[in-house]
Length: 113
Image (cartoon, rainbow, N blue to C red):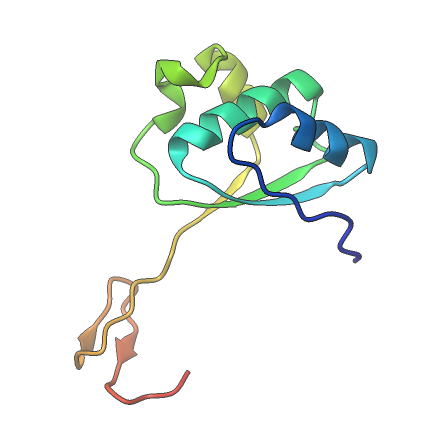
């Protein structure tokens, strides 16, 4: 595996995705909120950056059915298609208290990971 490109964007998604497509990037890691996710996957749909040739892995704690909200620029059916096969990950909440976390992992104070 080779790292081909690292991009960040704050206002516009189109040129970043265009660059990824030009470089033939196939595994895409994303870290953005759900509003940006709607914009990113809308553009990914338009560029064809989804489906069997591409694997998206995104980090986010999104609300239920977040892709159905109207501010993404695409029809929810298009977003659903672009999101098919996407791997969504979540952050593992750890605690410094001597208690079990949501994942069932017991974490002890002053324990090194």
